[in-house]
Image (cartoon, rainbow, N blue to C red; front, top):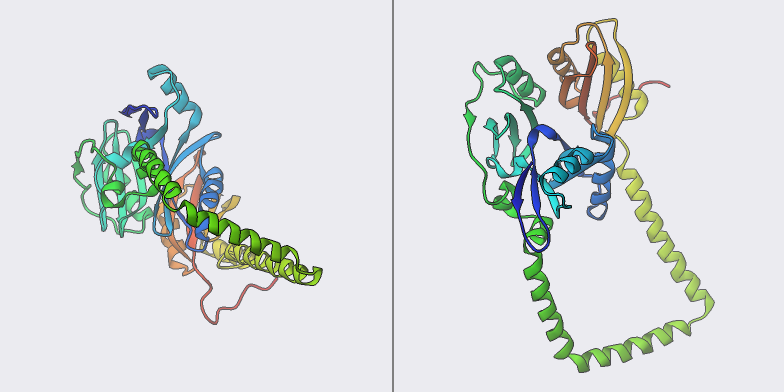
Length: 338
């Protein structure tokens, strides 16, 4: 870890990319007010750590997520400074820049990071302790939906920037609040005092009028109150129903299971785990002899039911983890009979 900044509000530290896991969350169907809770729940389900801590950076309807072990970070911080930091951010944010559509290899303090960009969104990221071989590089590209190349990309040595690349492109409210909180509080207090002192008479009149309206509302009969309560409850029920409908996957589990089985090449394989990371992202853990991640990616994408397919070897020698975005059912397509 590297110390980023010191201040009265506490220190900021950079988490090395080699200690992080990375993923992208699609929240296009989640209401804006519920996205923070959605991201927190998704990170806890996805992160390969028992005690995950994460940094989430939104780009439109997608969230770029770096996660690390809170226990490991605390152990390093206790050794380095002995104090609780104000926040921890991933090293990747301060090296390199956003790109429209490209695949690059970035040299870090420790190791190398491969990045695949699409419309300023980091759709895939991988870390190697040493420069990747051509086979490793092409496997990374293929997992991100890009074609293999004949040579590994030239490593870029950008050094550490003064500000993260997402701030240079357009700072989020969270980062602006973290960096300018002191100034914002002072300005806010000054504005609040001005607002309270200048229109004091208008505020008093407004309070009197509001009290009169509240007395009139309280004097209404029980029937009107029941109607208002029923209307409010109906609106809340509608919002809850819409939120639940937004969580439906693009295809039913029975259809999805059949498509996944049909897309797995070869014989002798076994599905060990079946998880929905979110409404349209599937993760499958397979046990199969001599797993070929590239062949799995090609077969799943060719099925027409999955996109953005990635495949990586699991912890066991015969295990492979497949992640894919589920495509909506095509017009006229029949479901699988129960």
